[in-house]
Length: 96
Ligand SMILES: O=C(O)C[C@H]1C=CC(=O)O1
Image 1 (cartoon, rainbow, N blue to C red):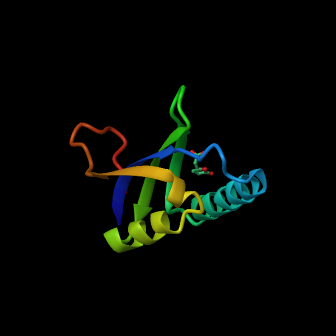
Image 2: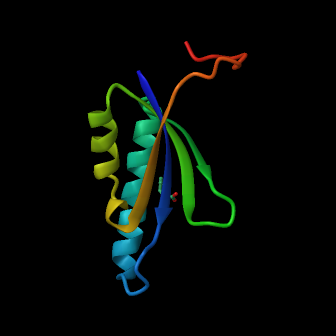
């Protein structure tokens, strides 16, 4: 398994139809929660003071992470930064 920290910054256009915004946010929540249930989206944290999140993904490949991110309903309105992670040698709770 490969682990990644992903920062997502959301920037919704101010003139976007409110019905489209509502539908997109509902689909984004369902999509995110499904991936959390299946174990690929391990953590999601709000970044204080920003319409942004910091998430950790555990996936089988770069291609799988790309597929997940590409299919985010909010993808057209996001800037995404991906950081690959390795286990730290000082971690007293290293992942299995
Ligand atoms: O609110 C966000 O950070 C954007 C997005 C990521 C997951 C989700 O449900 O919404």
